[in-house]
Length: 106
Image (cartoon, rainbow, N blue to C red; front, side, top):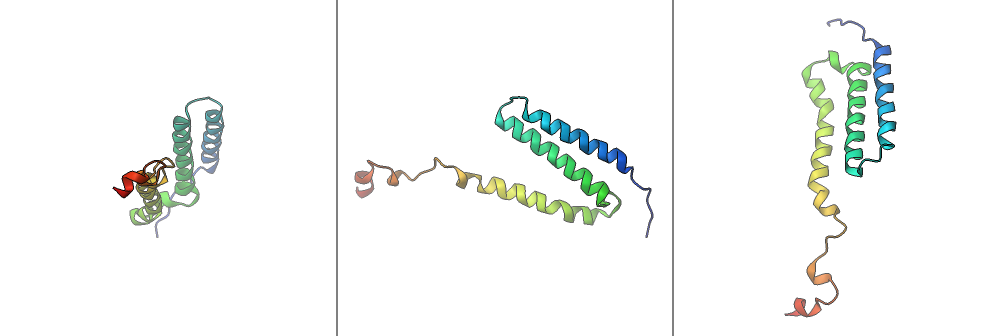
């Protein structure tokens, strides 16, 4: 078992606080929703990474354990993009729209 230097938890706290203040500031900027959402997701991922790396001590673990921790995130992003076409509220079958009954019969 190898020992490692104790992380500076106060420094990590200040980084988390700064990222939280940035997140709150982002919500008041009036940017387009897509930009706001991507910036908020990015800062949330950065905060999650800081917590996982230092408070859960993943920074000092083997690469395999880190891959185990990252795998659910990769799967969530993959499923999000794969299911995105099905979540379009404007997607309708042409035969189901009013006035196309004749086209469906022909």
